[in-house]
Amino acid sequence: SSPPNFDGGGGAAAAVQKNGTASAGGSGTNSCVVPPPPPGLVPPLMINGGDDAAGSIPPPPPGMIPPPPGLEGGGIPPPPPGGLLSSPVRRRMTAEERRVQLAAKIAEELDLQPLQPIAPESKMRRFHWDTTPLDVKEIKDTVWHDIGQMGTLEKEVCFDKKQFESLFHQRIKSSRKGKSKNDDDGAEGTAGQKRKGGQKNKFHKKVTVELIESRRSYNVDITLSRFKMSYGDMVKAVLELDESKIGLEGVLKLMSVFPSKEEMKTVSQYAGDPSILGKVEQFFLTMTSIPGLHLRLRNFRFLLEFSQTAPKLEEMLKGVIESCKTLTTDENLMFLLRLMLYCGVYLNAGTAKGWTFGFRLTSLNKFKSLKSTDRKTTLLHYIVKRVNKSHYYRLQRKAGRGGQGREFSSKNRGEEVKTNESKISRLGSSSSSSFVENVRNAVRRSSRVEMAYVESEIKQISQSISLLKISINEAAKSGNPYPEKVTEFCTYAEERYRALSKDLYTAHREFAETCRYFGEKEATWEEFFATWDLFFAEYQRAEYDVKRNIQNALRLRRKQEYEVQRKRAKRDRERRQQQSRKLRDSRSPRISEMVGSDMLASELMNEAFDKL
Image 1 (cartoon, one colour):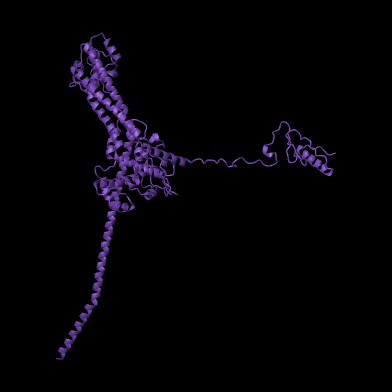
Image 2 (spheres, rainbow, N blue to C red):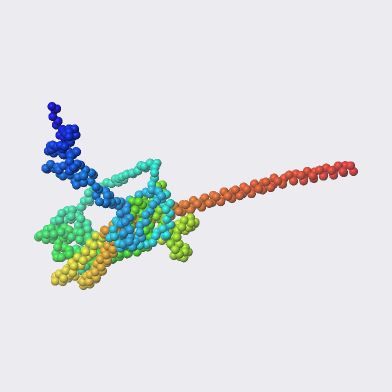
């Protein structure tokens, strides 16, 4: 007897092999009987069975999963129809391809010039600007929509790609050490001594009754001492609104010292002799005796201020309207934005910020921050140079001296740009030198206009007119009516107010259209125009730097030419002197021969005379 085998699979296989061997040694008439497998095991294959059992798999025991149909014959199941790669996997588009496809779709829908891929020979410095999103709503009916419908910029701008790449390519190895910033944070202190106390009041000759607090009484007394009239005359001038006696400054002073409700109550409750009251108390008592005097002072102030406020507001509103129209119609500004967009796209070629039809106005002041590779110039200075040369040739074409449809080829740049640098420099030194002079003059005034101030002033005018009309009606019922001139002024002020309201509505409408035209969200007037004013100031400063560099280069060139001419004249002079010296040396032997022959002749003659 053998030990029991606890390996179910091995025991079953051994039983199959033993039974198969025993049947092979017999007569062969008895079939092989395979015992059923234990629960949970795969049944063994039937070997050397009958005709029906040869090469087949017995049915599984209850509770097991039947074999797939492909394994009934003992072979591998066939592959699915169409092969293993019947459904090819689609490749996902890259971000660059999606941007190109979206830009082409926008260009086709808005009829824009399609964005062309730019492949610089050198790796350019990255320009971190804020671009306009690739969205039809962000571009349609904006300045970038108009720029995108224009022709190719290379034909209008003297743009040298090799020079641009040499200026703004990335450094491979930078040996430049970081410069230490010297922050001179010197606080300038001014030592001052406070003056002590006030002057002592030396005049206390008679006893007076003072009901008002001493400090308040002192301040009121100082203010009233500037009026050279009695309290009664003051009240009369206020009631008649006589500006010849009390001007705007006087009205403001009276309003500053007018008694409050508590002070009026304190003075009105005094039951003693009014003659022994102090000056301030008597003034408060006079102001209290006439009801509605403070309201009349307020109306008097409005009447005097309106002649100054209304023209000032009209000028501000017209300046805003003019600035909006100038920004949206100036051709020079449009040309400048096209060139700036081209340079930014060229710098960011191959990146997400290189596929764009425009940029945000917040990026205007970033052009001066990007320096060239050699740190000697900036992107804004480079743009100024290109604009100056292109502007000069545009003026030449308008004057009929530059030809029609002239393109800036490399030959023209090489020959004419050098010869016309002095003319371009003189063009930049004229009164209308700046390329953005007109638009900056319009924007500079509007950058100082606060939208909230204008709106509050116009609203204040409306409230003052309403209050004045109510005061006129109430004063007509009392014994102190307003003069007739105030009624006429009220009618005049209403007409001016309607005109101001109309100008305010026009300014808001033009400003909203301007913001939409540049693809910006509406902000305050001062913020929007201050962005432009700061950019134009930097641009004009860059123009001055470029003009100075051109003048210095011309001065250096003239100096070098003078040195070359001086050296050439010196060489010519030395060459002539050398030639004259050689000529003199070549003639000297002949002269000596002639002198020698004369001496020989004289000696022969002397000998002949001696013989005679």
